[in-house]
Image (spheres, rainbow over the protein chains, first blue to last red):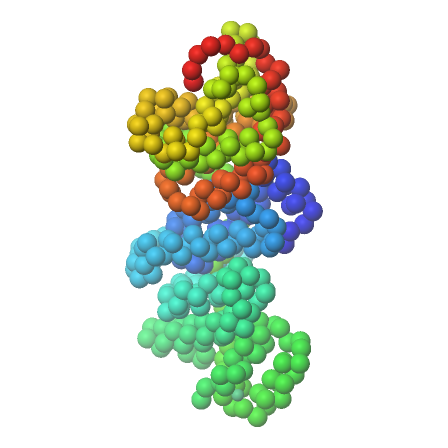
Length: 198
Length: 247
Ligand SMILES: [Zn+2]
């Protein structure tokens, strides 16, 4: 995750170099946003969390010793910030407002003109189903699922972000996947949108 | 039919494509004879293949910096209402004491710090003005003992109120100045002002948190910044002679 270029940038940022701080924010904002989106489920909330994370990170930058990669450190701040958001708002409220909130829908499968429009709609629906199903997960299961699947972190990296043992990460992912599969199958049964084959 | 508890992690690894290692070899043998694990593995593999995740933001789609920069450097209008509070003030004291411990300054001049001649500083050079205003503020805090800082009489004093106003104003002024310095290629000066700006802002933010964690962060900031403050103060020593007057 960390490379020599990033080390130079970090060194300058730690010394308060605004251009370096700006470059760091720009380099990592998409990843931080996407992680927050997975954890919080709404674009507007994820954007707020992204801003908050960047501000926290800049203020805490002098504490960053490089024991872990910078991205890992940033993900840890993102994770903690999102958990704070969730504690404040509760999971249920997040889901209830999802139907009315257009933010999330914008982020399911950007339509490609070459694609069959019907297919795009179908994948958007699957995305919604997944987000709805993710509300059946415990916070720990959700965190592991998002870090492994959304951020494509390895087991070791995920364990580092969450300060958990690697075995625990694997077990949580197993449970998350099983719950999601069952929740989505149930959803399909009740709506008949898809073949309930899983 | 359910998967065996002890093979859950192995199923997870397999689904995520981690197929190397002795555990996976053992699992391969187990799954051949275990319908529960076999079914769960197949179901999770199919689920993994069908996963549709949200689209990632495109490069350039998000722009966090303007808001972040604004938050880090509150405009002077907004900073009028900023309250530094006791924790913030103690942190400011730690900051300057930290500089002192680093072997810097406070070695000469009157007890309440150097006073610099405003009239001899070129008016157009906002950088020197900024340093000139920052130094007495930092020194005024440094020269007070902690018991005095936390005493009720001092916390309600006009001296403190004046210092708080000065810190607020400096934090508010820093941003424009940094941009001006960067534009004219004075990178080192911009960096120094950026250091001081961040410190003032950190102090400002501590007022909202009032916690030990915030103080630790600031202490770390001090440790990291000793050299830069030394440079800043070295420059100050080349400025015109002290004059009388308070902060
Ligand atoms: Zn088995």
